[in-house]
Length: 232
Ligand code: G
Ligand code: MN
Image: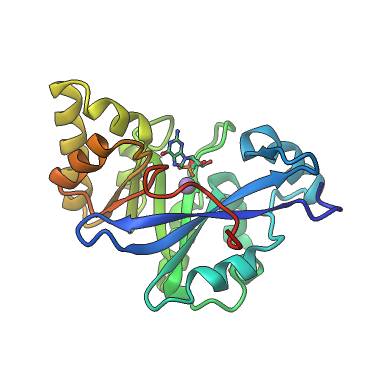
């Protein structure tokens, strides 16, 4: 698939919860197979990164083109997912890899989302590399907040700009008062540490209205836009 150039980034809009305007895009890796099937990273990323580069460098196929397209409109940003395992190692080699991913897009339009992988590890150099990125004006997001390792200790350890609340919390918030209060508290907590909150997985009008009512900064989800190729 890599050799046939079938692997690349699609984009999904991130929307300002107050103005409902698109404020940026998240790049999401997809394998478009010749039979029309579109595979998400869960099905191939581990295998691919091993084949692609022993250091599990994030793949960069059409990344530059996608990044340039995303930030064409004034003020919009492009986000890429990077694994904390990769970042821990990358702390040693400077920030050359940043340009490998985003090309010549200005740093202040770039977001890196820290995603947890299955590999259990200690944070080590993570805080240092987050500082290095932020010193360049790159924003850093904590992805899937509330699940796995992406939780309060991470928020304590890392001075992130953005926290993305996992979609499981959004899905439940419209179902019970307890879950609603949990989501409200997460949004408040994120604001109180000076970060911007993003509610992920907005699929219904009720979820959209709920997270706006709770005062989240940004929203993302199928209702607002599914991941699509930039051509679409
Ligand atoms: O871990 P991260 O938050 O980066 O995951 C993004 C993934 O979530 C993408 O693969 C995307 O297809 C998926 N996704 C985006 N929006 C929605 C949504 O509204 N509902 C569901 N179920 N998945 C979504
Ligand atoms: Mn993400």
